[in-house]
Amino acid sequence: KKIRDTTAQSDAECGKLQSEISKLQTQVRDIEASAAMFADTSDTKYRGIWEMNYSEAVKLLNQILAIDEQLHIHQLGTEASSSSFELSTLEDLPSFRLACETIEQEKRNLVNHSCQKSSQSTSKTPDSPLLREIFEKIANQSGFLIEKKLEELIEPLEESDEKLLVKVDNIFTAVGIKNVEDLAEINQYFLQHAFCLHCSENHAEISAEDRECSSPSSHEFVLEVPDVLTILREFMEEHKSENLVEDDSENTPKMRLTLSRLLDAGEVRDFWQQFRRVFPEEKERLWQGLEYGLTEYLKVLKEREKLDGDCSQLRRQNEELRHLLHKYVEDCENSNG
Image (tube, helix red, strand yellow):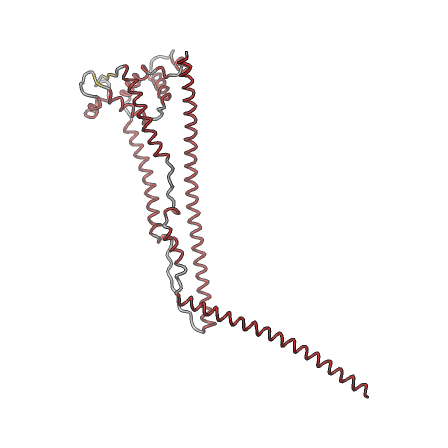
């Protein structure tokens, strides 16, 4: 009874842990999907900001050229020298082309990996007669792993493929086997430990030489009673260790390949510096000289404006004094007369 209680408690805990693992795996997949979506959105925004800044820089550059032309015409009295320039674009950057190739290659690798994994799964799928032979051995010798309630439900049923599959499915669920790839590995693993009553050779060697040995009608396989449990235990230990390695390699966070991360920082910096290199140093010195001259001329004009204001005030004062003097003279003449 204690063993049954312990087994039931262990099964319940395993089921709970498996449920939590499934939830965590679902959350990880959701997070990865969100990360991929955010990476694509960030990449799109990066391209949009790049194009916006590029357009704004070109617009400012054209305005500078228009001002330079006006300075030559109105201040220097000469025609502006034609400043033709060629600006590189984002597509001209070597790191951009390499980034696009890298991203495309990564996409192709993902597609090829999925196709390869699918083809491997298909190629590893065991023939049903041979798989049934192994399932029967596992179901007969590993029945203690079947849940009691399920065993009671299927006990009245006649022996059939469906009943066998229900038993084996419950056993595999208890030990953590859930997909076709695992079933194919079990088949290959048991083949390495099985032997034929009519052949002295190991079955794995026969299988490599003769395709017909996959059929129980050609060879009568023998799996001793202790061997089934031992082989299943060995398989699960190896299977778990391999899964830990695979899960660790597959679930390791990877930096997603995006355009903004693959562009070379030096090339990006040099790209925006090209707008400052459009005009030669002589042109900049000319602008600095004009700026200094126009600034000094502005000071002179402001001084003249101040003097003109003072002169206007003196004229008004003189006019007022003249008016007062004229009035005084008239008053004196009237008083004498």
